[in-house]
Amino acid sequence: MRVRRLWKYYGHFPALRGLDLELERGRFLTVFGPNGAGKTTLIKVLSTQIKPSEGLVEVGGHDVIDAADRVRGQIGVISHNTYLYPSLTAFENLRFYGRMYRVSDLEERSRELLERVGLRGREDDRVSEYSRGMQQRLSIARALLHEPEIMFLDEPYTGLDQHASRMLRGVLDTLHDGRRTIFMVTHNLEEGLEMCDEVAIQVAGRICYREPIDRVNREHFGDTYFDCVGGGHKWDS
Amino acid sequence: MGFLGQAWTIAWKDILGELRTREMVFSMLLFGFLVILIFNFGIEPGLRDEALVKPGVLWAAFVFAGILGLNRSFSSEKENDCLQGLLLCPVDRAVIYLGKFLGNFVFVLAMSLAVLLFFSVLYNVDVIAVLPGLLAILGLATIGFCAVGTLFSAVSVGIKTRDVLLAILLFPVLVPVILAAAKSSAFVMNGEGLFAGGSWLAMLVVYDVVFLAVSVMVFDYVLEE
Image 1 (spheres, chains in turn cyan, brown):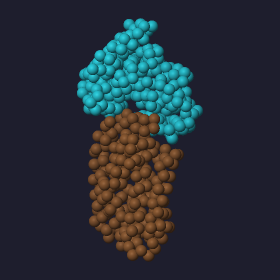
Image 2: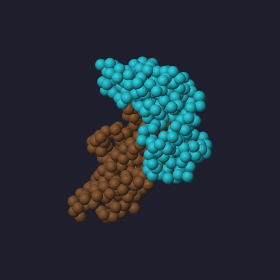
Image 3: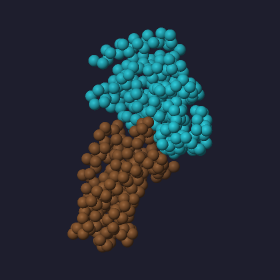
Image 4: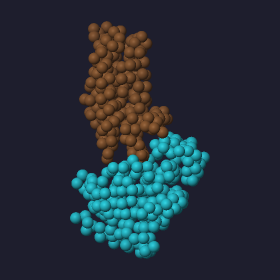
């Protein structure tokens, strides 16, 4: 994943301001940042949901503008929005997305994923009857259907109870196998630090801190974070 | 799965969802029936131009009720941000357009048939005798209506006042299709046959081809952000 001088404007407001970022295959990067730092905008640009205003963005070796469909075929996105149709059952949702991604052995793959996220036996229930945690677990299954090489996680723990959070951590743990690249944005310091290989802090549309996790002092990371966030105001001008 | 298969999957998803919630179909039917009923109060039996008025009533009901359905077409994708999920799929944007178009076509056509039945009873029109001609016009007009309606529904999806906006955007563009459909229907209902209104029918066909092609081409830009 390669990002060079990325700018993204909403009207005249720059949500991303010349952001540079590189992430090697198989690495897990967590990006922290306060509200309004541009974390979700960054993940939306990387996952082809919005186009960059300026700069170069390559994901999986493909440009997000010129080869957007190729990028989409390689990525999976888990967000606090589940992208699930409430009036369809869990199985119908997976079947729908599986057909969109042209997944082979769709029935078998769906069953395997439902088992993995602990929803086997509830696959014929409508999503509208699921709890928030169950919906998020199904959303994880949806994102993994086509075995993406790159995962984008946008505040995935939002609204989850402890059981669902633990399950998500378990799934992320199995995804973090050294072959799959994972990019997570969150403002939850505790959960964000747990499994990643690298940590970054984004403030006011730029990455202002980045370190490998083994060089991060977890006990004092909160201070580092607040130093960055406080210092970030100088970029607002 | 090919282009058409994926488009049908999107339409199937919309149809299945609607069959379970029945949000769109019920409101469309109710509105269509009400329009037919209210016009019936205003048209006195034996009116000199009754034959000219009836097709207009029928198409007013189809259009007003159809717009209600089109409003739901993309707004239903807003729940759980499903539209983003759909846009994240590695499929051509034309597939998404065609899928939504097919779903809308099925809903609007089903509503139109039910309203047509209600209309024939209330206005004492023998639609069975002219059914093939009416169905042909209905099919062509529904294609044109849904071709433009699906596109404009996508345009207005992110806007708070989308219900009003869709109607404002749609009506001027739909004038040719409403006019051609109402005129062609008048010929058919008067027993003059489908091809008696040849130029109006040709207008419907040309409208369908042009607006389907244009909509497919511009849909990518509409969904951009």
